[in-house]
Length: 340
Image (cartoon, rainbow, N blue to C red):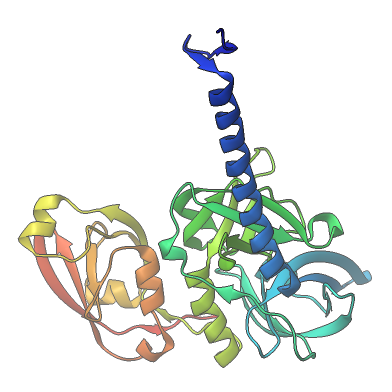
């Protein structure tokens, strides 16, 4: 008895049963993908807010007014909303609209243009909140979901993957933001400040930028950076950073250096520039030095150094360990508070 067959692309015959099996398998996979996106959106969307801002600038010709909008999300039970600095910076009025339609005037708690992050507070209770995950645990190729309000279309959901990790993005202040997540989850103007979410519903990034001339190249500030910045903004209302006057770049270390000095990290920070009269310059650091340790903590990236430049370091002598021409050197320096 003859059975119906089908020829696959590589010439192999598949009977109808096999063909149905593959079709059903594809459907199962598609359903699993859909369920992951739906689950993440259902969990986090209630915490996403629309932010409208009003700007007033006095000039010699009189007051000038401007409007803007963006996204944010409630990330703590005390009605704190995390968003981008460029969404709310300099705003004379901040208006927040919740997913249930309620609207409130919000108060700026603090913003940090250097990391393009800000915290505002909404005078409401019982708000749904999203959980910040660990951005260092995500992997390239992992499914992520972006939620925001592009062009005012509230709670828009797009999905994609983590395209790359460890990107650097230049803030509007000129400072380099390290450990930025690249994704192809579609973002548009108005998505800024919204969450980038895993299939489990954990926020691993704050959507911040797109390349207008490209497709599928979008960026988010990692949740670990956002957590550190938000805590300081809530405590001080601004980011108090100790300052040493070094321009650095994350570089891989030669294996022989790692083995010889028994280093715990295989990357470090190369000193690319020194500001004249800065604490680092006065202490004797040189361009080309490689910082491997700062205040007894191993340094593997510029972001490690940024995190250790805490306000508690201001005015206190610390040890910086560098590799200079393959030699390990210890240098004492005293950070000062960053102006502005």
